[in-house]
Image (cartoon, rainbow, N blue to C red; front, side):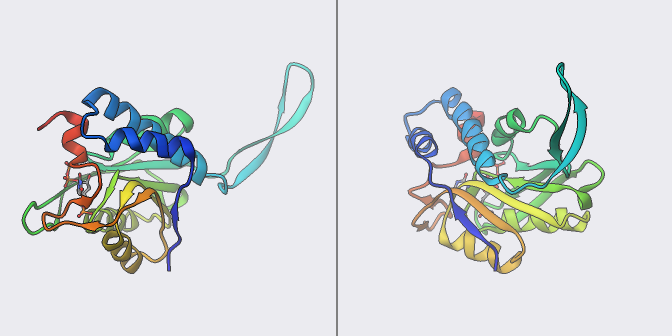
Length: 208
Ligand code: PRP
Ligand code: URA
């Protein structure tokens, strides 16, 4: 079964308190989602493999360590886009692939409308990012797609999850570790996470 990690960090908790507040406006919401994306990624990349390389500092020759694998960030459109900038700030060499998935508002099933990836997914560490893990349908579909392009080293990075989504993802993709800033209580009858933060895409892009 896949690893599930709920990050415990005072800065993440503090920023989540801002994101959850319905009175937080679009600008601060967008900036803070991006910052939490960066903080989570910093915590969950401790185990990335590095390789030694010989370089010269201004003083002498020395051994330094570089990331062994290419990192590819795959945001699930739209809301996943909100996490890309923050992650890119701390991994500037990362490439970005995109999966467009929207959730049918009544049936809550995912529909794929776009996919584009850099070459070499099979040799990369792939971070599938989306702030919300609700039924788990969108994340499961996005992971299925990156696997179809050859990805094997995949991590799901989200902000808010619930037991329903975590269970679904663990069942569908037991090989994918799940990292979240918070695990909430449940889904309501509309498919929203409780207490959650509302519709993340709408709050990021001001569409409601
Ligand atoms: C939201 C969210 C996830 C999905 C989660 O996207 O960003 O992608 O719902 O729900 P699920 O786990 O039940 O699939 P939405 O479909 O609202 O699209 P948007 O990001 O374009 O607003
Ligand atoms: N998508 C969102 O944006 N929010 C939820 O609570 C569930 C799905």
